[in-house]
Length: 174
Image 1 (spheres, rainbow, N blue to C red):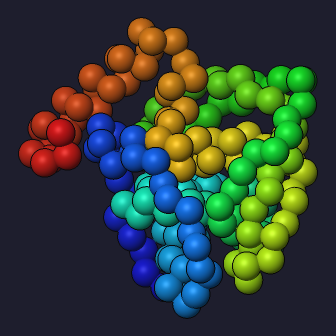
Image 2 (tube, rainbow, N blue to C red; image 1 turned 90 degrees about the vertical axis):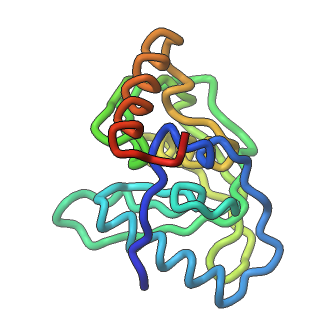
């Protein structure tokens, strides 16, 4: 397994729409392993493939609490097929927007159709933190960032801050 470098805002890669994974082969399974290793190292609770520069529809999650055994989850080609009318608000952060957090309102419960690591179709019903995390990561696969769910003013401030930081680092990602 390999820890991959994270793509950081304002890199335009984060706005790419990820493509469907047609075949689950050893390359896809290695990508899942690398993504989990990268996520745990960061540390984070979710990671979409686009966040390491791979525009494929896969995400990994682990919302287990500190002290609990790890519960890594792999979602390939995830699609939200149902959501509740009830809403919940969580303070979200993102490995691609380090050290910035904001409250985001999303559906409290969702149902996600996806393939597991072995290519078997699954239906996952989620609420609470798992539902929020799934929605956050699926957004990434569609080129959407959590800051797109906050006010335009706050979003522009965050983008300016990260653009300035990238310029100071001499990033070519602008």
